[in-house]
Length: 192
Image (tube, one colour):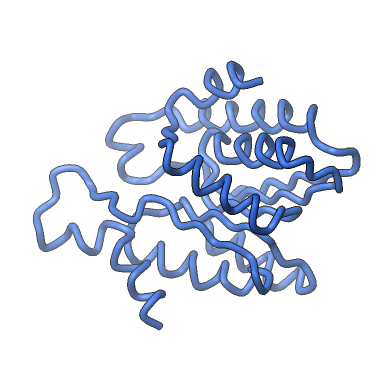
């Protein structure tokens, strides 16, 4: 399973501190409902499934993944084949279903994050999530919008993880870096 995850998500990155934090989150709340905003190849999805299995969370899981699979500026600049990335995500989902408890639900919402989050807020008012990962648009305004909308879907006592806090765009001048990286959006939400 781990070899297949690494193969299918070869362009993704995972740091050991991220695994430590995810392990602590599972130990604290044992999540059943997981929302990821920004799915890319599905490595975060697979890590959720691995941790849920390791922590013996046997009740059915509700997993929602939102991504446009269009890529951001950084993917366009690097000429990443986003169709291949989405195909890897779909394969990862099928792989994860093999070790999920029966009756687990996987929901893929293809579109921009605001549209997907709005749908969840408007159509599924009773559904909230134990664990939410924000890892979509890297511009400050996108990060702030995603965090603010997803906050409405977080259960009391749930955990929201925001990735790429210190990410900065390639070769940008100082004036545009702050607007084109997530940090300002995250800080603005925290300050509110």
